Image (cartoon, rainbow, N blue to C red; front, side):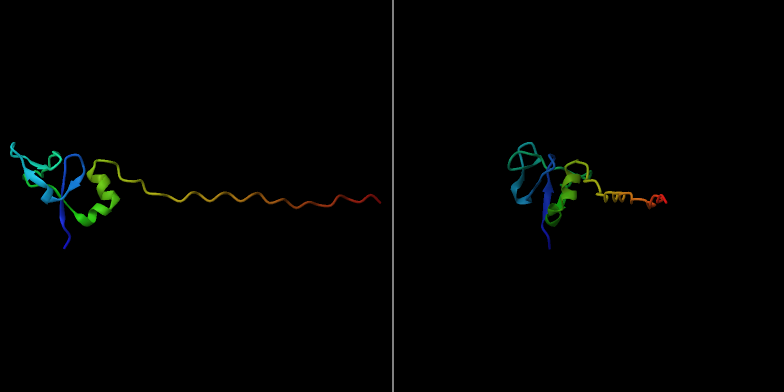
Length: 91
């Protein structure tokens, strides 16, 4: 079973064991950054396995996801030399 991490308001994530309720009754990380809360008041969580996924991390940080890469168009082949006729020989 994967461990859940708390999502902080600055887009980073933290171990729930490193977070505690402060004197202002707000859930904060040990470095002072508040934990992001869902609409129902519970902390937002993210699976520890998803942290490895760069797209999830970028989306949670509010950045645009990476653009899909498209192959470059193939270069046009060089034009072939046309057929050259021999000049008429003078008789």
